[in-house]
Amino acid sequence: MSIQKKMLSELKQKEIFYQAQNYAFEYIDNLETSRVYPNEENLAKLKVFNETLSEKGKTASDILSLLHSKGSLGTVKHTGGRYFGFIIGGVTPISIATKWLTDLWDQCGGLYVSSPINSELEVVCEKWLVELLDLPKESIAGFVSGGSMANFSAITAARYHILQNLGWNVNKKGLNGAPRIRIITHEQIHASIRKNLVLLGFGDENIEYLPSDSQGRILVNSIPKLDNSCLVFLQAGNANSGAFDDFDAVCKMANKVNAWVHIDGAFGLWAAASKELSYLTKGIEKADSWALDAHKTLNIPYDSGIVICKHPDAMANALQATGEYIIYTSKKRDPMLYTPEMSKRSRVIELWATLRYLGVQGVDEMITTFHARAKQIEQGLRELGFQILNEVVFNQVLVACDNEAKTKKILDYIQKSGECWLGGSTWHGKTVIRISISSWMTTESDVAKTINVFERAKNN
Image (cartoon, rainbow, N blue to C red; front, side):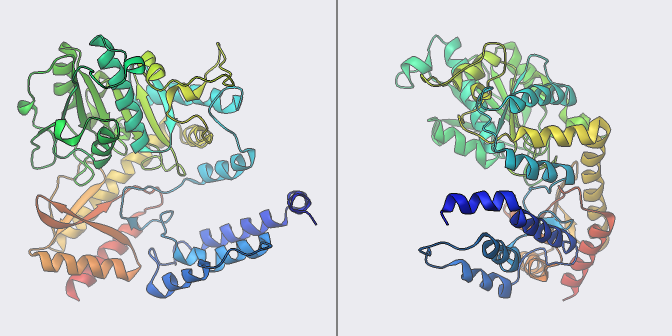
Protein backbone atom coordinates (compact mmCIF):
# COMPACT_ATOMS: atom_id res chain seq x y z
CA MET A 1 0.00 0.00 0.00
CA SER A 2 1.35 3.43 -0.89
CA ILE A 3 1.96 5.94 1.89
CA GLN A 4 -0.81 8.13 0.46
CA LYS A 5 -3.38 5.33 0.55
CA LYS A 6 -2.21 4.40 4.03
CA MET A 7 -2.77 7.92 5.36
CA LEU A 8 -6.08 8.34 3.55
CA SER A 9 -7.23 5.13 5.23
CA GLU A 10 -6.19 6.45 8.64
CA LEU A 11 -8.15 9.64 8.05
CA LYS A 12 -11.24 7.70 7.06
CA GLN A 13 -11.10 5.09 9.82
CA LYS A 14 -10.14 7.60 12.57
CA GLU A 15 -8.82 4.85 14.89
CA ILE A 16 -5.55 6.65 15.60
CA PHE A 17 -7.44 9.78 16.60
CA TYR A 18 -9.50 7.81 19.10
CA GLN A 19 -6.28 6.20 20.35
CA ALA A 20 -4.68 9.61 20.87
CA GLN A 21 -7.83 10.84 22.59
CA ASN A 22 -7.81 7.94 25.04
CA TYR A 23 -4.15 8.50 25.86
CA ALA A 24 -4.79 12.20 26.40
CA PHE A 25 -7.70 11.47 28.73
CA GLU A 26 -5.54 9.05 30.72
CA TYR A 27 -2.87 11.73 31.05
CA ILE A 28 -5.47 14.19 32.34
CA ASP A 29 -6.87 11.68 34.83
CA ASN A 30 -3.40 11.05 36.28
CA LEU A 31 -2.31 14.68 36.55
CA GLU A 32 -2.98 15.05 40.25
CA THR A 33 -1.24 11.81 41.27
CA SER A 34 1.72 11.95 38.88
CA ARG A 35 5.10 13.41 39.73
CA VAL A 36 5.33 17.05 38.71
CA TYR A 37 8.88 16.46 37.42
CA PRO A 38 10.08 13.05 36.17
CA ASN A 39 12.46 11.03 38.34
CA GLU A 40 15.75 9.56 37.11
CA GLU A 41 14.14 6.21 36.33
CA ASN A 42 11.59 7.75 33.98
CA LEU A 43 14.14 10.06 32.41
CA ALA A 44 16.27 7.02 31.59
CA LYS A 45 13.35 5.51 29.68
CA LEU A 46 13.60 8.32 27.14
CA LYS A 47 16.65 6.58 25.70
CA VAL A 48 14.24 4.38 23.75
CA PHE A 49 13.70 7.29 21.36
CA ASN A 50 17.37 7.33 20.38
CA GLU A 51 17.07 4.92 17.46
CA THR A 52 18.06 4.68 13.83
CA LEU A 53 15.44 5.97 11.43
CA SER A 54 13.74 2.87 10.01
CA GLU A 55 13.67 2.16 6.29
CA LYS A 56 9.94 1.52 5.98
CA GLY A 57 8.61 3.54 8.88
CA LYS A 58 6.43 2.48 11.82
CA THR A 59 2.68 2.29 12.23
CA ALA A 60 0.77 5.26 13.59
CA SER A 61 -0.58 3.13 16.42
CA ASP A 62 2.93 2.05 17.43
CA ILE A 63 4.14 5.66 17.45
CA LEU A 64 1.28 6.87 19.63
CA SER A 65 1.73 3.93 21.98
CA LEU A 66 5.43 4.72 22.41
CA LEU A 67 4.74 8.38 23.07
CA HIS A 68 2.15 7.49 25.68
CA SER A 69 4.02 4.69 27.44
CA LYS A 70 7.48 6.27 27.49
CA GLY A 71 7.23 9.86 26.29
CA SER A 72 4.58 10.92 28.80
CA LEU A 73 6.89 9.76 31.60
CA GLY A 74 9.37 12.44 30.56
CA THR A 75 6.97 15.35 30.65
CA VAL A 76 6.83 18.16 33.20
CA LYS A 77 3.28 18.57 34.50
CA HIS A 78 2.79 22.22 33.54
CA THR A 79 -0.90 21.51 33.13
CA GLY A 80 -1.25 20.50 36.79
CA GLY A 81 -1.68 22.65 39.88
CA ARG A 82 1.74 22.34 41.52
CA TYR A 83 4.18 23.52 38.89
CA PHE A 84 5.66 26.80 40.13
CA GLY A 85 8.86 26.97 38.09
CA PHE A 86 9.13 29.34 35.17
CA ILE A 87 6.15 31.62 34.60
CA ILE A 88 4.68 29.21 32.10
CA GLY A 89 0.99 28.89 32.82
CA GLY A 90 -1.24 25.90 32.11
CA VAL A 91 -3.99 25.37 29.57
CA THR A 92 -7.69 25.97 30.03
CA PRO A 93 -9.96 23.12 28.91
CA ILE A 94 -11.66 25.25 26.23
CA SER A 95 -8.32 26.37 24.79
CA ILE A 96 -6.88 22.87 24.46
CA ALA A 97 -10.14 21.52 23.01
CA THR A 98 -10.12 24.37 20.48
CA LYS A 99 -6.51 23.61 19.60
CA TRP A 100 -7.36 19.94 19.01
CA LEU A 101 -10.12 20.97 16.63
CA THR A 102 -8.24 23.70 14.81
CA ASP A 103 -5.01 21.71 14.46
CA LEU A 104 -6.97 19.59 12.03
CA TRP A 105 -8.07 22.73 10.20
CA ASP A 106 -4.35 23.46 9.71
CA GLN A 107 -4.87 27.13 8.93
CA CYS A 108 -2.06 29.38 7.74
CA GLY A 109 -2.73 32.74 9.35
CA GLY A 110 -0.51 34.99 7.25
CA LEU A 111 -3.09 36.42 4.87
CA TYR A 112 -6.86 36.83 4.75
CA VAL A 113 -7.03 34.61 1.68
CA SER A 114 -5.10 31.83 3.45
CA SER A 115 -7.51 31.82 6.41
CA PRO A 116 -10.52 34.15 6.56
CA ILE A 117 -11.56 32.79 9.99
CA ASN A 118 -8.12 33.61 11.44
CA SER A 119 -8.20 37.12 10.01
CA GLU A 120 -11.68 37.85 11.35
CA LEU A 121 -10.85 36.54 14.83
CA GLU A 122 -7.66 38.60 14.96
CA VAL A 123 -9.79 41.70 14.46
CA VAL A 124 -12.18 40.59 17.20
CA CYS A 125 -9.42 39.70 19.70
CA GLU A 126 -7.58 42.93 18.98
CA LYS A 127 -10.71 44.89 19.93
CA TRP A 128 -11.34 42.77 23.03
CA LEU A 129 -7.74 43.10 24.25
CA VAL A 130 -7.64 46.86 23.78
CA GLU A 131 -10.86 47.17 25.77
CA LEU A 132 -9.82 44.64 28.42
CA LEU A 133 -6.48 46.36 29.08
CA ASP A 134 -7.88 49.88 28.55
CA LEU A 135 -5.35 50.77 25.84
CA PRO A 136 -5.69 53.46 23.14
CA LYS A 137 -8.48 52.58 20.70
CA GLU A 138 -6.27 53.11 17.65
CA SER A 139 -3.90 50.34 18.77
CA ILE A 140 -3.18 47.41 16.46
CA ALA A 141 -2.29 43.89 17.62
CA GLY A 142 -0.04 41.23 16.15
CA PHE A 143 -0.34 37.60 17.21
CA VAL A 144 3.09 36.00 17.40
CA SER A 145 4.84 32.97 18.87
CA GLY A 146 5.54 34.31 22.35
CA GLY A 147 6.56 37.24 24.55
CA SER A 148 10.06 37.38 23.07
CA MET A 149 8.75 37.73 19.52
CA ALA A 150 6.22 40.30 20.73
CA ASN A 151 9.10 42.35 22.12
CA PHE A 152 11.01 41.87 18.87
CA SER A 153 8.07 43.16 16.83
CA ALA A 154 7.56 46.19 19.05
CA ILE A 155 11.24 47.13 18.99
CA THR A 156 11.27 46.80 15.20
CA ALA A 157 8.27 49.14 14.94
CA ALA A 158 9.88 51.58 17.38
CA ARG A 159 13.13 51.58 15.39
CA TYR A 160 11.25 52.38 12.18
CA HIS A 161 9.14 55.10 13.82
CA ILE A 162 12.02 56.84 15.60
CA LEU A 163 14.31 56.83 12.58
CA GLN A 164 11.47 58.04 10.35
CA ASN A 165 10.95 60.99 12.69
CA LEU A 166 14.67 61.68 12.50
CA GLY A 167 14.50 61.80 8.71
CA TRP A 168 15.81 58.32 8.00
CA ASN A 169 13.90 55.57 6.14
CA VAL A 170 15.45 52.41 7.54
CA ASN A 171 13.62 50.18 5.05
CA LYS A 172 15.41 51.88 2.15
CA LYS A 173 18.69 53.03 3.67
CA GLY A 174 19.33 50.32 6.25
CA LEU A 175 21.21 50.97 9.48
CA ASN A 176 24.64 52.03 8.17
CA GLY A 177 24.91 55.75 8.81
CA ALA A 178 21.52 55.95 10.51
CA PRO A 179 20.93 58.49 13.32
CA ARG A 180 21.63 57.11 16.76
CA ILE A 181 18.71 55.72 18.76
CA ARG A 182 19.21 56.02 22.50
CA ILE A 183 18.18 52.83 24.33
CA ILE A 184 17.20 53.48 27.93
CA THR A 185 16.23 50.80 30.41
CA HIS A 186 17.05 49.60 33.87
CA GLU A 187 19.30 46.85 35.09
CA GLN A 188 16.40 44.53 35.92
CA ILE A 189 14.90 44.43 32.42
CA HIS A 190 14.07 40.95 31.14
CA ALA A 191 16.64 38.96 29.18
CA SER A 192 14.42 38.86 26.08
CA ILE A 193 14.72 42.64 25.74
CA ARG A 194 18.50 42.47 25.79
CA LYS A 195 18.51 39.57 23.35
CA ASN A 196 16.21 41.36 20.91
CA LEU A 197 18.19 44.59 21.08
CA VAL A 198 21.30 42.68 20.08
CA LEU A 199 19.43 40.85 17.30
CA LEU A 200 18.21 44.18 15.94
CA GLY A 201 21.70 45.63 15.80
CA PHE A 202 21.79 47.94 18.81
CA GLY A 203 24.51 46.17 20.79
CA ASP A 204 24.61 45.81 24.55
CA GLU A 205 27.27 48.51 24.98
CA ASN A 206 24.90 51.10 23.51
CA ILE A 207 22.22 50.51 26.14
CA GLU A 208 21.92 53.10 28.90
CA TYR A 209 21.25 50.97 31.99
CA LEU A 210 19.66 52.77 34.92
CA PRO A 211 19.55 51.61 38.55
CA SER A 212 16.56 49.83 40.08
CA ASP A 213 15.14 49.86 43.58
CA SER A 214 15.10 46.91 45.97
CA GLN A 215 12.09 45.40 44.18
CA GLY A 216 13.51 45.73 40.67
CA ARG A 217 11.58 48.86 39.67
CA ILE A 218 13.24 51.59 37.63
CA LEU A 219 14.31 54.61 39.70
CA VAL A 220 12.37 57.41 38.07
CA ASN A 221 14.71 60.12 39.34
CA SER A 222 17.62 58.42 37.54
CA ILE A 223 16.07 58.84 34.09
CA PRO A 224 18.20 61.20 31.96
CA LYS A 225 16.86 63.99 29.79
CA LEU A 226 14.83 62.38 27.01
CA ASP A 227 14.19 63.40 23.41
CA ASN A 228 12.57 61.96 20.28
CA SER A 229 15.57 59.70 19.62
CA CYS A 230 14.90 57.70 22.80
CA LEU A 231 13.45 54.21 23.16
CA VAL A 232 12.57 53.59 26.80
CA PHE A 233 11.84 50.13 28.22
CA LEU A 234 9.67 49.42 31.25
CA GLN A 235 8.26 46.19 32.61
CA ALA A 236 4.96 45.02 34.02
CA GLY A 237 6.04 42.23 36.31
CA ASN A 238 9.68 41.69 37.23
CA ALA A 239 10.53 38.04 36.44
CA ASN A 240 11.83 37.53 39.98
CA SER A 241 9.89 39.86 42.27
CA GLY A 242 6.80 40.51 40.15
CA ALA A 243 7.26 44.29 40.66
CA PHE A 244 5.77 46.87 38.29
CA ASP A 245 7.49 50.04 37.10
CA ASP A 246 5.98 53.49 37.59
CA PHE A 247 4.46 53.71 34.10
CA ASP A 248 2.53 56.89 34.71
CA ALA A 249 5.53 58.96 35.80
CA VAL A 250 7.94 57.69 33.14
CA CYS A 251 5.41 57.90 30.28
CA LYS A 252 4.55 61.49 31.16
CA MET A 253 8.22 62.38 30.85
CA ALA A 254 8.55 60.53 27.54
CA ASN A 255 5.32 61.84 26.01
CA LYS A 256 6.47 65.46 26.39
CA VAL A 257 9.36 64.90 23.97
CA ASN A 258 7.87 62.14 21.78
CA ALA A 259 10.17 59.42 23.11
CA TRP A 260 8.89 55.87 22.50
CA VAL A 261 8.01 53.78 25.57
CA HIS A 262 7.69 50.01 25.31
CA ILE A 263 6.29 47.92 28.17
CA ASP A 264 7.36 44.30 28.45
CA GLY A 265 4.36 42.80 30.20
CA ALA A 266 4.50 39.14 29.21
CA PHE A 267 2.76 37.95 32.38
CA GLY A 268 2.15 41.11 34.39
CA LEU A 269 0.32 43.37 31.97
CA TRP A 270 -2.73 41.14 32.37
CA ALA A 271 -3.13 42.66 35.84
CA ALA A 272 -4.85 45.55 34.06
CA ALA A 273 -7.84 43.21 33.63
CA SER A 274 -8.18 42.67 37.39
CA LYS A 275 -10.21 45.21 39.37
CA GLU A 276 -8.16 44.44 42.47
CA LEU A 277 -4.76 44.63 40.78
CA SER A 278 -5.22 47.19 37.99
CA TYR A 279 -3.60 49.88 40.16
CA LEU A 280 -0.30 48.17 39.33
CA THR A 281 -0.67 49.13 35.67
CA LYS A 282 -1.64 52.78 36.12
CA GLY A 283 -0.44 54.80 33.13
CA ILE A 284 0.20 51.92 30.72
CA GLU A 285 -2.09 53.55 28.15
CA LYS A 286 0.46 56.37 27.82
CA ALA A 287 3.07 53.99 26.35
CA ASP A 288 3.57 53.34 22.64
CA SER A 289 3.78 49.54 22.55
CA TRP A 290 3.18 46.54 24.77
CA ALA A 291 4.17 42.85 24.76
CA LEU A 292 2.13 40.07 26.35
CA ASP A 293 2.18 36.29 26.44
CA ALA A 294 -1.26 34.71 26.56
CA HIS A 295 0.22 31.32 27.41
CA LYS A 296 1.48 32.60 30.73
CA THR A 297 -1.27 34.40 32.61
CA LEU A 298 -4.21 33.58 30.36
CA ASN A 299 -3.30 29.87 30.08
CA ILE A 300 -3.57 29.54 26.29
CA PRO A 301 -1.67 26.62 24.67
CA TYR A 302 1.74 27.33 23.18
CA ASP A 303 2.45 29.50 21.30
CA SER A 304 0.50 32.69 21.91
CA GLY A 305 2.39 35.97 22.14
CA ILE A 306 0.76 39.35 21.50
CA VAL A 307 2.30 42.66 20.45
CA ILE A 308 0.11 45.76 20.67
CA CYS A 309 1.13 49.13 19.24
CA LYS A 310 -0.68 52.45 19.06
CA HIS A 311 1.15 53.35 15.84
CA PRO A 312 -0.41 51.07 13.20
CA ASP A 313 1.60 52.58 10.33
CA ALA A 314 4.88 51.97 12.16
CA MET A 315 3.95 48.31 12.71
CA ALA A 316 2.88 47.74 9.12
CA ASN A 317 5.89 49.50 7.61
CA ALA A 318 8.41 47.90 9.95
CA LEU A 319 7.06 44.37 9.47
CA GLN A 320 6.02 44.71 5.80
CA ALA A 321 6.51 42.01 3.20
CA THR A 322 6.30 42.10 -0.58
CA GLY A 323 6.22 39.41 -3.24
CA GLU A 324 4.57 38.75 -6.58
CA TYR A 325 2.54 35.91 -5.13
CA ILE A 326 1.37 37.69 -1.96
CA ILE A 327 -2.32 38.56 -2.25
CA TYR A 328 -3.24 41.43 0.05
CA THR A 329 -6.90 42.34 0.50
CA SER A 330 -7.77 46.03 0.69
CA LYS A 331 -10.79 45.73 2.98
CA LYS A 332 -9.76 42.79 5.16
CA ARG A 333 -7.00 42.22 7.69
CA ASP A 334 -3.80 40.61 6.43
CA PRO A 335 -2.06 39.43 9.64
CA MET A 336 1.46 39.24 8.21
CA LEU A 337 1.54 43.05 8.18
CA TYR A 338 1.70 43.01 11.97
CA THR A 339 4.09 40.12 12.66
CA PRO A 340 7.57 39.08 11.45
CA GLU A 341 6.14 35.75 10.28
CA MET A 342 4.68 35.20 6.85
CA SER A 343 3.54 31.64 7.46
CA LYS A 344 2.13 31.12 10.92
CA ARG A 345 -0.41 28.91 12.58
CA SER A 346 -3.73 30.52 13.44
CA ARG A 347 -3.01 30.77 17.14
CA VAL A 348 -5.53 33.53 17.70
CA ILE A 349 -8.41 31.03 17.52
CA GLU A 350 -7.53 29.55 20.92
CA LEU A 351 -7.17 33.05 22.36
CA TRP A 352 -10.60 33.99 21.02
CA ALA A 353 -12.16 30.82 22.46
CA THR A 354 -10.67 31.42 25.90
CA LEU A 355 -11.64 35.09 26.04
CA ARG A 356 -15.17 34.30 24.89
CA TYR A 357 -15.42 31.49 27.45
CA LEU A 358 -14.10 33.51 30.39
CA GLY A 359 -15.62 36.89 29.63
CA VAL A 360 -14.47 40.01 31.48
CA GLN A 361 -15.39 38.57 34.89
CA GLY A 362 -13.68 35.23 34.27
CA VAL A 363 -10.42 36.86 33.19
CA ASP A 364 -10.56 39.07 36.28
CA GLU A 365 -11.19 36.08 38.55
CA MET A 366 -8.38 33.96 37.13
CA ILE A 367 -5.78 36.72 37.36
CA THR A 368 -6.88 37.81 40.83
CA THR A 369 -6.77 34.20 42.04
CA PHE A 370 -3.10 33.88 41.07
CA HIS A 371 -2.40 36.74 43.46
CA ALA A 372 -4.51 35.18 46.20
CA ARG A 373 -2.60 31.90 45.93
CA ALA A 374 0.74 33.75 46.02
CA LYS A 375 -0.32 35.58 49.19
CA GLN A 376 -1.41 32.25 50.69
CA ILE A 377 1.98 30.68 50.09
CA GLU A 378 3.72 33.81 51.36
CA GLN A 379 1.82 33.66 54.64
CA GLY A 380 2.35 29.92 55.06
CA LEU A 381 6.09 30.12 54.50
CA ARG A 382 6.49 33.13 56.78
CA GLU A 383 4.82 31.17 59.55
CA LEU A 384 7.37 28.41 59.01
CA GLY A 385 10.21 30.90 59.47
CA PHE A 386 11.25 31.31 55.84
CA GLN A 387 12.39 34.72 54.58
CA ILE A 388 10.19 36.36 51.93
CA LEU A 389 12.40 38.76 50.01
CA ASN A 390 9.89 40.56 47.82
CA GLU A 391 6.68 42.49 48.13
CA VAL A 392 4.13 39.98 46.83
CA VAL A 393 2.18 42.35 44.61
CA PHE A 394 1.16 39.81 41.99
CA ASN A 395 2.09 36.14 41.49
CA GLN A 396 5.77 35.95 42.42
CA VAL A 397 7.23 34.85 45.76
CA LEU A 398 10.97 34.88 46.51
CA VAL A 399 11.98 32.62 49.38
CA ALA A 400 15.27 32.16 51.22
CA CYS A 401 16.72 30.71 54.42
CA ASP A 402 19.21 32.34 56.75
CA ASN A 403 22.14 30.90 54.78
CA GLU A 404 22.89 29.98 51.17
CA ALA A 405 23.62 26.32 51.85
CA LYS A 406 20.26 25.77 53.53
CA THR A 407 18.38 27.51 50.71
CA LYS A 408 20.07 25.32 48.09
CA LYS A 409 19.45 22.18 50.14
CA ILE A 410 15.75 22.91 50.50
CA LEU A 411 15.41 23.72 46.79
CA ASP A 412 17.08 20.44 45.88
CA TYR A 413 14.84 18.48 48.27
CA ILE A 414 11.67 20.01 46.87
CA GLN A 415 12.65 19.51 43.23
CA LYS A 416 13.48 15.85 43.85
CA SER A 417 10.30 15.22 45.81
CA GLY A 418 8.14 15.25 42.68
CA GLU A 419 5.25 16.70 44.70
CA CYS A 420 5.76 20.16 43.21
CA TRP A 421 8.43 21.92 41.21
CA LEU A 422 9.87 25.38 41.57
CA GLY A 423 13.04 27.03 40.36
CA GLY A 424 16.03 28.77 41.79
CA SER A 425 17.31 32.24 41.03
CA THR A 426 19.53 34.97 42.43
CA TRP A 427 18.22 38.19 43.89
CA HIS A 428 20.63 40.98 44.77
CA GLY A 429 23.43 38.44 44.80
CA LYS A 430 21.59 36.00 47.06
CA THR A 431 20.42 32.50 46.18
CA VAL A 432 16.63 32.32 46.32
CA ILE A 433 13.77 29.93 45.66
CA ARG A 434 11.46 31.43 43.07
CA ILE A 435 7.76 30.55 43.16
CA SER A 436 5.51 31.54 40.26
CA ILE A 437 1.75 31.04 40.45
CA SER A 438 0.41 30.99 36.90
CA SER A 439 -1.86 27.97 36.42
CA TRP A 440 -5.63 28.09 36.71
CA MET A 441 -5.49 24.60 38.25
CA THR A 442 -3.60 25.70 41.37
CA THR A 443 -6.01 25.37 44.30
CA GLU A 444 -5.74 26.26 47.97
CA SER A 445 -5.09 22.55 48.55
CA ASP A 446 -2.16 22.61 46.09
CA VAL A 447 -0.63 25.52 47.96
CA ALA A 448 -1.15 23.78 51.33
CA LYS A 449 0.58 20.64 49.99
CA THR A 450 3.46 22.77 48.75
CA ILE A 451 3.85 24.45 52.12
CA ASN A 452 3.96 20.99 53.71
CA VAL A 453 6.80 20.02 51.37
CA PHE A 454 8.71 23.12 52.47
CA GLU A 455 8.16 22.15 56.10
CA ARG A 456 9.48 18.63 55.52
CA ALA A 457 12.45 20.02 53.61
CA LYS A 458 13.25 22.38 56.47
CA ASN A 459 13.13 19.60 59.04
CA ASN A 460 14.97 17.07 56.91
